[in-house]
Each structure stands twice: as C-alpha cells, then as structure tokens.
Image (tube, rainbow, N blue to C red):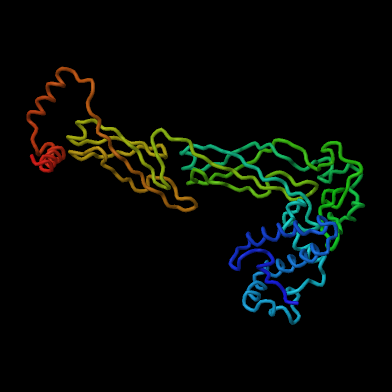
Length: 373
C-alpha cells in the first residue's frame, strides 16, 4: 500500500516554515487523539500517520532528504518513513516539544526543576555631572534572600527534606495513556524531587525571606542615558538552594540647566547682546567639570554661529578620550528701550546701508527679482 505524502498528511505546502508545520501538527494531533475518539481504529491510524509525518518534517536533515527522494529516502533502515518502533518514546519527545507549555515545562527536562530566583529591576536617575565624573552609588533593594535559620533548605533546623515518594526524587512522573506516555512535573513536590515534612518556621518552608539589601553600584564615567547595568547573582535568591537571579540597574540622566548631550559631545546655547554680536567681544561659558572657558566673538557674528571647544565634552565610556563642546550663540534683540536708545537706533538705521545688512538686503533683492520687480 502506497504511503501518503507527508505534506498532504499535515495539510501544509512544501515551502512552509516551522511555525506553520507545528501548528498543523498540533491541530491534527488533538483532532485524532485516541482519548478523544473512544478507541476509534481509523482515528488511531490517522494519529500515527500524522505523528510519523511530523517527526520526519520537523528535522531539517530528514526533511531535506524527504524533499529530494520522498519515502524512498527512509526505506532502507531509516525509521522516519514509517511508524517508529518505539512509538511511546517518540510521542513523548514530540509532545514535549509541542505541548510542553501545557504541562508547565517549556523545554525543561526532568531533574532541572529547582526554581531559579527572579531577576530584579532598579531604576536610578543621576545628574550629567555624575555621568561625567562617574560615581559609586549605594542602593537599597527589597528582595528575597536565603533564610538564615534553615540555610535555604526550607526544613526546620535539625531536620532535612525527604525524597519525594511520588517521583522518587526525579521531580517528574510519567503517565501512560493509550499508545503514548507523557512525562510531567511531579504534583507532590512541584518538580523539586524533595518534600518537607517539618517546614522552617522563619520562611514557611520556602527557603527564602524578604528583606532590604544594601548594594554598592559602580557607575563608570561617560555612562549614557538608558544604559543597563547587570549585577549577576544579585537578584532574588533561588528557592531551596537554587541559583539566584540577576539585578538590572536602568540608568536615566536628569535634564541639565545648560547642556544638552549627544553621545560624547555637549551643546550649549548662549545668548549675547546685539552690540557684542555687532562689535565683537567675549564671554565666559561654564564647563561640565565646573570650570569656565572664555569664548571670543568676532565682529558681525550672527545667531546660530557655533564655536567648537575640543576635549571639553563627556568622557567616552571605558576610554581616555573626551568629546567636544559646542557653543551656539543667539543674538538677543534689544527690548524695553529708553527714548535715548530708540533715538540712537533710529540714527543707526538711517546710516545703515546694504553693506551693513548684507543678508536682509540680499534676501529682499532676490524676492524682487523672483516676482519681477
């Protein structure tokens, strides 16, 4: 009797991806499951056929061979082309892959059931000056730590956990149903392999208690906004001696009164008077390290003119390099003029020429030319 095409059995196309293949198998496996069909012989045959098809196509090497040679690729000793000899073992592996999340396994294997501690998050805000200099910060984190009374075992002092009678210490039990068997977490010990007859009074058998932990965190110079620092093993303690989780520090920088940051460079907008821009002059500008730098303004400077101060920016993380600082001037228009100031400006305006205001004169000249005079 000729065998049906595996893709036809699963109802998928030859070019389908693994996600589509898995979804098709799941649907058909549940449809033809023997427990759902009251021992119907036709359903059992289809159930085996679906399993054989999926076991072949889920393996990239077997799938490549099947795509090239069809069923002939497995006729001489290859078990993938027909029903596996150890059908129960095969179904256990496949159902662990497909339905593991239903059993609370999510890829875990027997014996790996100890509960690792949860990872923790701590939000920290620092100033731009602290990011420039670097710092060592002391923080307090509410977390779960190993119970000192029972040393994390969960058992009352003087006693110890016992081997689980249901799973004999394996943490998993196997249930047979029809033609296959499924391994699942032991419901008696919750996968730990041990049970506690006399729990610790301090932690109620959990092996952990909640308390505030004080930690020292090193913030390196040049750290940027949004950086995440990982402290391995500083998260919650694991249950009953399991590994601890990690602590993640999420850093954010406070807005600065004078500076804006772009990587290792700093930007500062400085307003200057109308006369300083016209006649030239100089001014002092603060630096991120607290010192002052004098900036010279050439005669006739305009709003937007930028000055670059090399090596006056932020440190580049974990190097000896420094970014630059950029000063951008903004010419301030005089306001609240006195009568004398107004008279002087009016005299200045009458004495002005195209050479005095080259940009505005040139702009309006181009406008006239554009609109034909």
